[in-house]
Image (tube, rainbow, N blue to C red; front, side, top):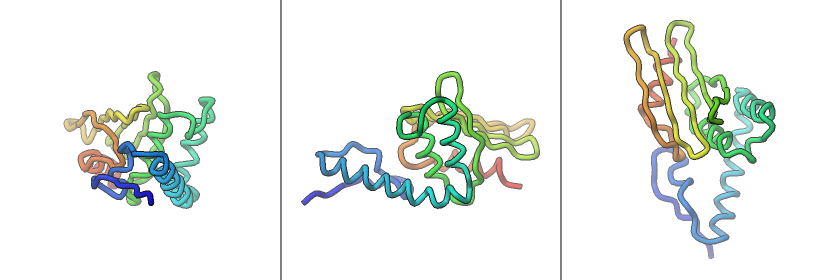
Amino acid sequence: MTTLAVMPGDGLFGGLSTPTAGREATSLKKALWTELGRLRAVVARTSGAFNELESLAREHGTSIPRNAAFLAAQGLLMALPSDIPAPEFDVDSDGDIVLDWVNCGSKMLTIAISEHGRIHYAARLSATKSRNGSDIFVDAISREILDLVRAVTRR
């Protein structure tokens, strides 16, 4: 009998990025991620964000499964709560995937995620208030970053 044991973490996907032990656990984990991706694809049909990310990957001569940075961006997108609007996407000169949220006012947030899950972010919340920093994405987005996205996208 095979069991996939995951460490408790923040959020629904907590611990699924941790290494597995054995072929069966690796296969089970891959099947789980495939199914989660399929379920999120249903949401993608309405939001279009996953389709935009896939289009961007094709523009850069790759696909999401074949490129670690695009795969990390897809994971980040899947971890976003449903109340957060879809971002705009781009690729920076380092190959990191860039997610941008811009409010009709002066608020904006940019997140760049690397192939290794390293996140760099910068937010302008007003003419005098900004935030920036770095984090690692492992299945869940930090509360600090989610709060920034909500602060920027709130009308």
